[in-house]
Image (cartoon, chains in turn blue, purple):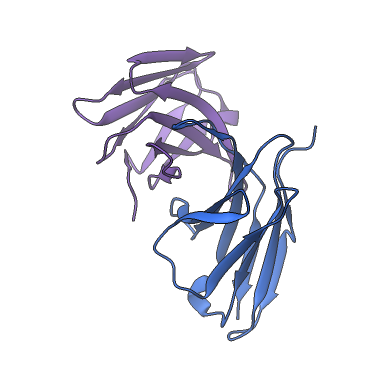
Length: 115
Length: 110
């Protein structure tokens, strides 16, 4: 059973460009969340997708957008890249049922460097 | 913004000693989870404790939760060099996504 897979693993982009990161959740999971982790910091919640809709959003600008597909995979898009967007981007999949969040399974992340 | 704050920020111990990390949070929760991260890689789930539980064990890990004080602790007994990593607490409430603290960086000296 494959866990959470993210692609690419590393990426270098120029300021002002756009980037798309991809995530395939763990088999059987229906919810995908994206996090940004700056060096030496904890992961910061970007947004969460469930049933192909953005359900929750953290304190990130509209330059950050996403999508979830019918097979539960997800994309994170960042437009007009800034140097400050350089970080490890983590995708987490989980099951949402009732009101109880269960454990999340994380991918290995995409290391984005903006130059 | 961070929901939880871990304490200490960094901890260095000798192999065989116990390591204790603390986490404080601000809002009501359904559960609290601890994760481990090896140098810039993905996070690995360690243990989940629900709001109606006070203590939970998993192998060498012991987690306590005090909802009245909005705090939790993670104890790693008989530490090994392989336990060197960053440890994060994360809180979950309702359908709210997991919110992470800033982490404790644990160094276990062989």
